[in-house]
Image (cartoon, rainbow, N blue to C red; front, top):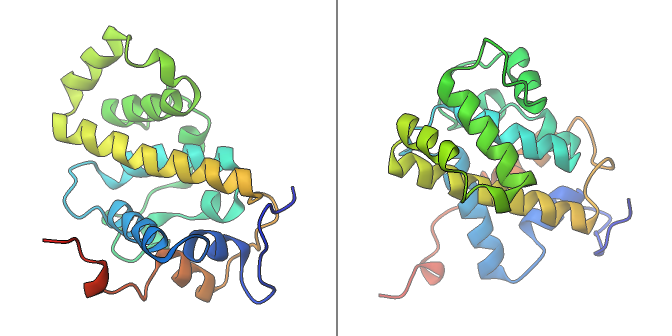
Length: 194
């Protein structure tokens, strides 16, 4: 799949597209959004719930870096313990019958799958929303759709621009640090106006 933008020879394509392509404020907004969503210090969604949702889009985008990342070990600040590979495989396969999922994990993986594949059918599915409200708070539902919006939207943007099977695997430590935006700091000029 060809890249649809110019990638500088000295830059990893994924890092270039995520961290350099676009105007400064919008690029930095995306970087901060990723840091906030992946660190997610305030959410009550568990690490497994978040990873179960994230891995679907990563696998479907066909980016080996994203699909190969395990945030519990690759993302400093990601809260939660080790997550078994069996969990990732069953989540990516949408194997709702797997006994290793909690009811919430199963529901969130189903929601993530439908959010990506059949968004038009979600709003009118009263049974789905009854299950969502039975297992999740309103705040958790908000966190779920915000996270999925970030992951699905970014995945589609990357695919449109040519990211996929051509990423360098395994990524270098420098590439991972750039994707995590390890050097991101507060900048006064980007703070909201008062």
